[in-house]
Length: 280
Image 1 (cartoon, rainbow, N blue to C red):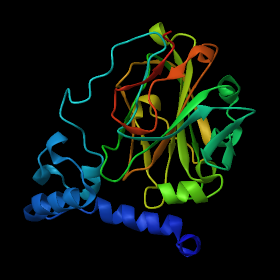
Image 2 (image 1 turned 90 degrees about the vertical axis):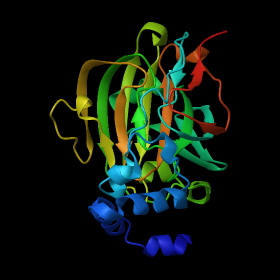
Image 3 (image 1 turned 90 degrees about the horizontal axis):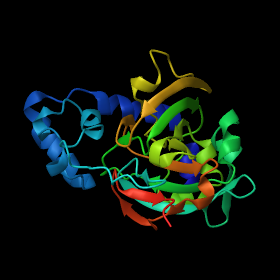
């Protein structure tokens, strides 16, 4: 399988899949095609904001919104950080000597993950959680804390798969793949925390869309960062979206991180559910 993936034209193939996903579906076939696709991947149509026939393409369905009120945010507590996505927590730990663990025996560097961003030093002892999104999942990404956004960046890279088999076998996967990161400083109940959400693209999932709010009319460079002028954020705000599905590495650092502890182990999680806090 890995040999096949080395031969597969990752970027050209992903562009082709993306183009097919964007193709408008015939009006009369939208309901059955979206319904069959949802059934094939296990997506819950009952949670979708619109009925199947209202989605103009498969990508429109992938980036669907949910019915209002379906993902309430956990009540505010000291140091409360909520899940930015629907997915599965597949790894959790602490950054030690600048290193995170992707899977057993596969370390990667924080400095590479954030492409030497100047704020990476504030995440040196951070706790991290890795959240995987399957094709069935809701693909929008939301703000996990109260605070202010200070930077957004993008790193051009490869497009390896990020499923369980690939994550367990591909060294430095998250720092090899294309990715976008969003960094915020906590305020109110999250005072003293610095949080980074790193959105990792994958094979046939080359698109990571950042909500225009954080860009202020600017284009995100292929590789580089944009300063954000302390733009206020709150749990549940739109952060971005994956075009098909992928992985988020969530880092919780800053001076208050020494007392921050995860409250969720490996397993499913929904947007808005609390991932951890500084409560005693």
